[in-house]
Image (cartoon, rainbow over all chains, first blue to last red; front, side, top):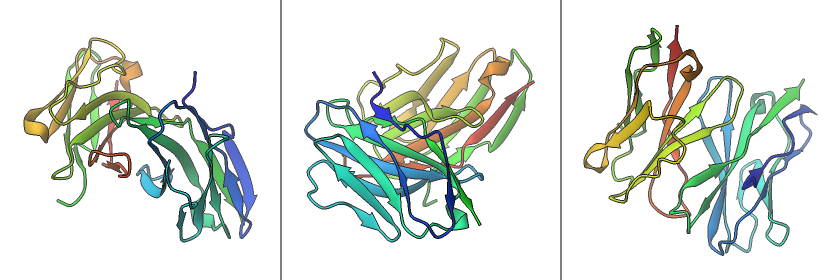
Length: 115
Length: 114
């Protein structure tokens, strides 16, 4: 079974619109962390945002926010006021305590921002 | 340096040759990961080192792949008798132990087997 599921292989969004990238996860751990990374065409992996399983507030970092719905095991990334530079691959990842903190990755979503 | 360093950045090798890829993690990071990323694909887990624990090698695709981490720091990924399907970008990442810390990635090594 997939531990991290990103159901959107690709998305097109108009510049300045908000965009939501989906991520669902599967774990029996009570303590875990959820991460989003961005990978532009240049190839580097850029950390965007982190949500801990015990965090009661949704994480926010500038234009990025994480819509954490624990009961639904959902950790969607929301990008507000999208920009052309947001075009990239976006990966959701999870780290579980019982797996010795190994990172588990989704397949990614390719986001293209249209001018 | 301040970040994760990988070398070489690019490597072209002939089919059947052995290659070594190096990763120098951030100082003090106990966790080190190797991933493989084929063109347009997601990250494929290869191997994970955590401190002095036995590494998780469950992602290595064949016995031609091996990795070691010396002194809890630098890691070397070795691919023996390379095949064309080994062509990919090999990414290394390191992190502090713990669920609340992100992994920092190197720039990757682009391996091309001709």
